[in-house]
Image (cartoon, rainbow, N blue to C red; front, side, top):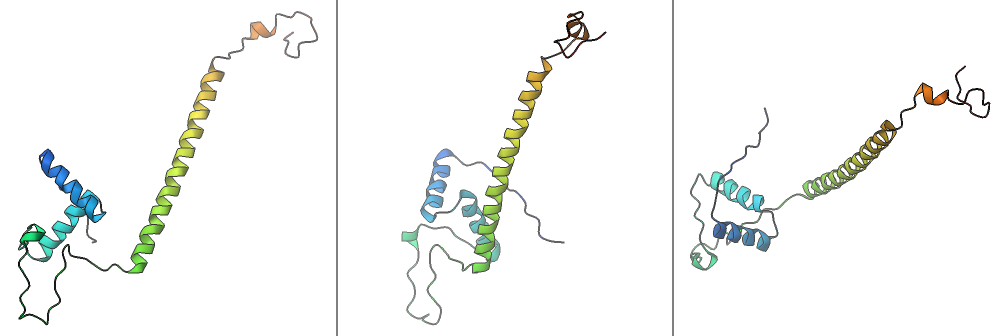
Length: 141
């Protein structure tokens, strides 16, 4: 069975929420992506992740020249095929939304026409009040 996404919800105060929104805007990602990134890092490092301001990051030791210097915020390379697929899905979503709007407009138009025609009830007595007048095509005799 594949992985199923789960939803986590919690409350934060307004100041923390605004700070998170600023972080998301600064990184040009959604607020949900901020949380997903944090959760992914937390899981990847078995809960041993500390969130600290950039100015409080420890200076890199000159002894460990073999390891590449970590970047902040961490970056991940995404294959072009993934980006293309994501763009394709966004375009398809946009197209489906347009089709849905067209369908809603059409259904609304049909309902309006049905409502208008509902008031137009023809009674047989109204059709037969001409008595012998051949100019009316709908006469009962």
